[in-house]
Length: 422
Image (cartoon, rainbow, N blue to C red):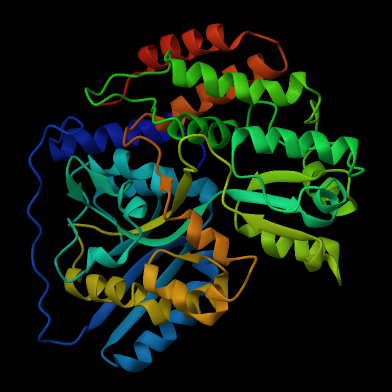
């Protein structure tokens, strides 16, 4: 998710004033959800906003729901991700929201505190989702969104390169990851053992899990930032070590990591599920046999990042019950498997992973295993600014050679200036 623009933040601030909402993280009592009438079929028009490829493909899936529910019409508006935040903020301020919208997980704390979202009713069985997927849409103890799909990060590695280097299985620990990266260079023929972003985009997805894997975090139980901790310094030191040890490339251009992984110049990288089909396309026939995926190596745990998108219903919806019934249908395991076939979005419902298309696919099944040990970013309204802070300070760590200790202090000071938005 990109940072909110000043215009978007202004619109959202106006929405907060209009709704009189000013709840603080973790201090408010849960908001009571209203029930959904289940003894009548869904009827009328349900207006849905969906972003990116999901907005383009959802109408195709919605036709199946309409066929099974002749009295309802699903009207999908596709919105580019780059416009979505401001469009949602403006609609909330003007009270012109759709019935239902897709929402990125990192936006949930921000929009969840506007008072515009309808709490999830008991119609939705929340026990069927991956527990980590329920973290982002839970705002101030109230669940305001339903996980639609999830993504996480796993280790992609060139089996042939590691095998040549004498590494017979995917690295499981930090020490094994470093050793495998070095062996891939020294014995496997790779120019780079590991790709990690040298700061800027993607840095937070690397740094945060390495803190979590030690049992640490960047936000304490009291709601204050904890960047200047031993866990943070250790994570930053480990991050920096791949560059000081010349195991990772210092300077890259967009597309380099993908190209190097395919041509054998790069042995390993940590990335998301969208890269499975990308590598199969770039590598061509036979490349599937050359690479594999596995849960990320770790320290005390092997925790990775969890993201994705949620589905939210607005309180101003004129067709609330029908909207929630559609959300419930989209959460059915069989429907989630169909959606995976259409869009390749990873199911948020655990039972869907028992379908052969996911369970028996060795390039996909490890994502389901990783989702059992995954964590979401902190539920704060300013996370976009915090993410930018991490990206900037990581670049100074990697490219500028700033010490891990000083980087941790700079992160702490910057985060305290930004605040949590509560």
